[in-house]
Image (spheres, rainbow, N blue to C red):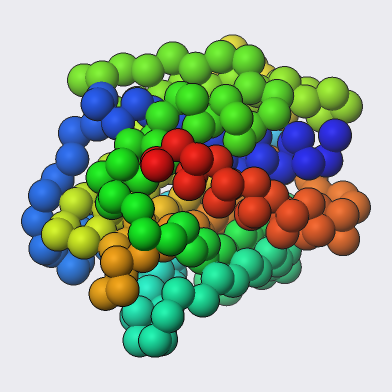
Amino acid sequence: MMKTKLFAFILASVSINALAWQVVQNNNQNWLSSIEAAPSVYAEMNKYFLKQDPSNDARAYVENFVETIHANMAQETYEFMNQKLAQPGCVPSTQVSFPEQLTSKYNFNSKHEFESNFLKVESYTCLGKLDLDRVFETLMSEAFQRKAINGLKAIRLNQNTNQACVETKIFGLGTSRYCLTKHVQKTQNQYVIQSFNETNVNNPSAPVYFKETINVITRLASGEISLYNLMYARSVDLSFRGMVKSKVEDQQEDVRTYLIEGAQ
């Protein structure tokens, strides 16, 4: 059950058919940092505080949080990739953590409770010598998602807006129904893919209050392909954290297997 929950949560953001994507092709190194969250991202996060702490107006904190986390994630991505690309070969790694504090500007009880139940995943996977575009197409495909995510009930795609709406149902945890929009940049040797979860749909029992995901697919100098994943996510309160960490780490090999299988 825990494994099912986690990977519906982590990987559902890679759900759109590659042919549907509007892809920006440039070498702008500030492209990732320049992405702005839609107003609904702030509204969905604020619903947590309207429910848990209605006497406290948290809107200023929510605005600061979304902007701060996005800037920090962009910087983390740049620094991580620069470090990995400086290494002589492709060296895989996985880090799963539960940050207790993500921002410092505001100080109130519901803010601390909100930040103390985040899941952070940062992984780097080596896929061998494959075609860069084919790996991108596989990662973005519905077929890959259906193999990689247990609990998936439905996907609705919009080819004009790069939007996907996803429904997952996990026994003991409830149903999540949310929509996200992918932003995609392509350079000669890399795809950068970013998304915020933008809306929860039809009052799900397990809403996603905040999730931002960054994926980077890179063709290395050796001809190998690597996949970087960075995610910060807040849904229901987390429990059994040791098991959560173990299951996230175990899943990385499955993701690698499915990507290689689909991209060959």
